[in-house]
Amino acid sequence: MPRLFTGLEIPQDVAFALSFKRGGLSGARWIDPENYHITLRFIGDVDGQTADEVADSLDRLANSLRFSIRLTHLGTFGGDKPRALFAGVEPSEALSRLQAAHERVLQRAGLPPEGRKFVPHVTLARLRGTAAEDMARFIAEAARFEPLTFVPARFVLFSSRDSVGGGPYLVEQSYPLAA
Image (cartoon, rainbow, N blue to C red):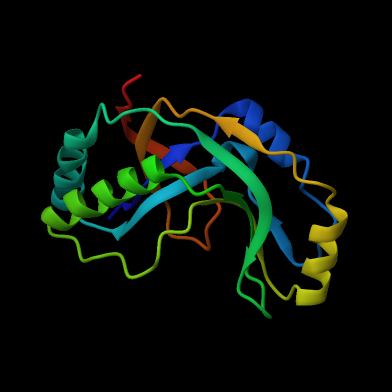
């Protein structure tokens, strides 16, 4: 059974710039830059027939309009018990529309609704046992976050193996965004 999700790839130059944030944080398992992405919709473990239906459903969204993505800050998920360090995405109407379209077509394909609110981000590290104070210090010492902007040319259907996250992720199918 493949574990699937849809997302936007991070260009190499942006991934390279983000990779300079790696290191110096206890309890961090750093994501390899080639596995950086912005998840649009987590699908989960599905059988082959459902995977085919998902891929076919996403075809309807191909040639959605291109738009700009801007990464603007570092943040964490988990509050007092941080579990992930991420680069946050500036709010974007176009990105929200694309994500909502993914949600609609995947529900029509028979998948249950995504229970979590869409918070676009690029996960840089998964955290275990990292104190909130250490996390706050790391973000403060990480220096100013110079915004990074790119225009994705496509969205993709990724697969991953069942693990604690972080890749490797494989592109199962790609769908162009129109210029």
